[in-house]
Length: 307
Length: 332
Image: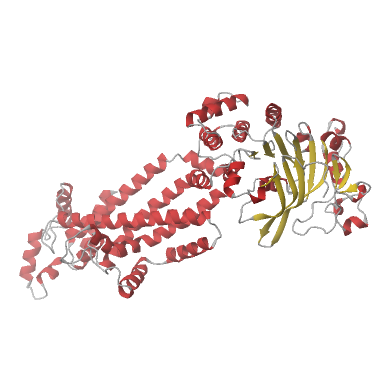
């Protein structure tokens, strides 16, 4: 699996027309200079040799040197991963907390104005494309209201601190969070509304248990598995959405890095990103399979069958 | 309105109307229902599916889901207090502690993901000032008393891991743990096989005699409830059509509907013969006849029955019939 990703990632780069020489040397360089550059990078050799060399170094932790910045890829990539992780974590926290608790509120207040408004908003958000949402948010909060900065990770020249970071992260993280939030909201609402209609909820009320206990202990407990499942999928969505969002908001994360690298044909950087992204997705599906196994499937099967 | 009985009753349901608001109209599930339960008395409510028995039970506990329907009229008096005037918090103190209820499907009425023991402990802690371990102790004692074998093992299981009979015993224990003065059993034996049915019924009967609590036994099966009840209230289309001591209902039913019910129940003498049945089918509950609701199916229907609905006629202290044939009795 990983081998396949590494080969495809490597070959794709070879298929793309153009190489970094034109970017580095400019339009007026002669063919001799180009030859010399390619030789210095080892790109004059046949591609299987290149592949084996590259993979050998990669496994040892040497990802090569960025053609554009002339610094080790590991340095650039490491900082980008940290920046992206901040964005992903913030987005997921926003999406999960608002979606889950909003869904509970809507299910408890079913058919009330609160429910109707939130459900309508959720449907609209869930159907909107990420880049459009990003632009709308920029227009409202940056252009019209001027509350949040449009781009970057920190105020230029200022001492970087957490408040400044969060201030800059607000728009990009909310943008990436809106759609997953809507998805989690809708699932929580419908699953909990269904659970609250079950006879065991009525029976719990008939025993005099408080509404809080009925909703959280008896209702929410029965929907943990589907919510956990979908939240995992949404985390995957946020990884993808973050790549776009970083470009829109110039957030120096992995997405922004690879975007610039592609423009510059900075092949070592692109290959590193592709392989690590592949690794990440393999790891995520492995972890989610393990979690699925841990949530006893028989418990959930009979939760459905008992109705 | 003079009433022979029920003024000091434990529970008095008076002219209850519970309606459901559906997209295509109003469903009058309970429409002028009355009944009384005295302290320590076992009253059976009998009627066919859709007659409003369960809705009456849920209305008493004020458990009709708000987005589906509501009690539009009537009074619910428990020990003289109007349940309709209680706040939700006050109702929580009454539910399970004063009036407990057990349900038709014990699998569905127990939470599938919570251990049986935890559901018992939770309820014990709500109604008795006990710790977790005391709650467990109390539950185990109660389960042993309800003839449950190996309760220590059972409380660690979840509802789908045990039989219907065991689940219904757990439901009964959940209802009894708050030491209620009234137990409502809504078709509590319907889903069980006939042997288990008898066991559960005998258990309810035994606990009733031990504790002196009152029981409201709801069933579509006259034969089942006749064994344990003192009095029977017969329901048809959301109303009480007859009320009489159990023996009288069995030997000399008055209302044509009760007679039909009685005759359609099998007994030893009818063996081998085709059972008589009540002609026709119940009217559309969203489009009820304006006169007596049983008139379209009644073999004795008169002009008057189609014109106007009969009041309750009192034949003696214990017997009420909602039928023009008994106009000689005094209307209440």
